[in-house]
Image (cartoon, rainbow, N blue to C red; front, side):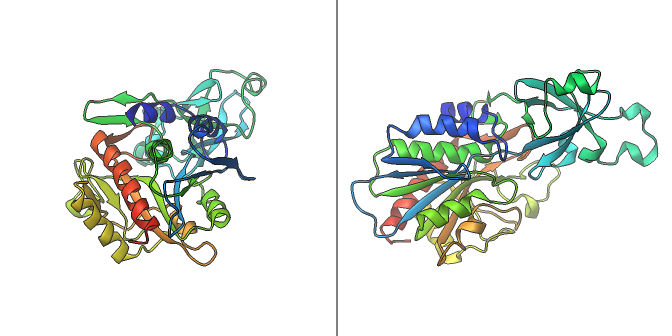
Length: 339
């Protein structure tokens, strides 16, 4: 799983430009899945036969896209104007290195020495910043970068021992979990959705759910862990190293409490660490999946990540393994109609 995460997180695939990761995932699963196809939006829909037919049709979903930036214009001095792709805290982007295709740049603006008064503490929005790719004129810049190109943080995967650090753990961990499940021998038939454009409005998974028509679904995600200095206990959301995080409610979905409690009991019975999220925040593909067609019983299982949607997220290796175990176990129980 860790090797797979390293490979996936170091691939650049922001929202709307998921083709690089899509090609790699298809290559990884084509020999193990019974059917793999790509729909009109670019989602991967895969089917894997199990030893038995499922009583309930189960879909597992993970999104391929990561947060990033879109190039919107070029100034006369060769610097690039940009907009965010997804929810990015403006405080984390100043001075960061980004990759635009095969080119590199730095997100910059006025130096602190030139600022006065409140300007020194004000958070700069993308409109106040530029990407410097080293060119001196618009003509030079336009030979390297085009309007509409996308950029991502340029970050390498780091093995920290018990923890890992990388960009795009949201949601390359979900992709890695689904790939590992597809490569295993399954007890029941299952469907898999590797969806596009989650970070800009959960767009792809609504299409895959409509195509697959599942009875039940599990979105496999990464989520905010705020178990760090300066955050009060009631705002920590979940904790790294304490196991899989289960949502009761977020900004897009009100989850079935009985289902969440039964999965937590299932985890405890099988020695899998899990925890409830203690805040209502964010949103996942569950928001569109659970409303598809006649409605879908949907569960969200997530990897706790510190500093999510930044150049570097930190997560525990044990949580990654527990996420895989609980996803597979919960999916089997759903297929048996026991959840």
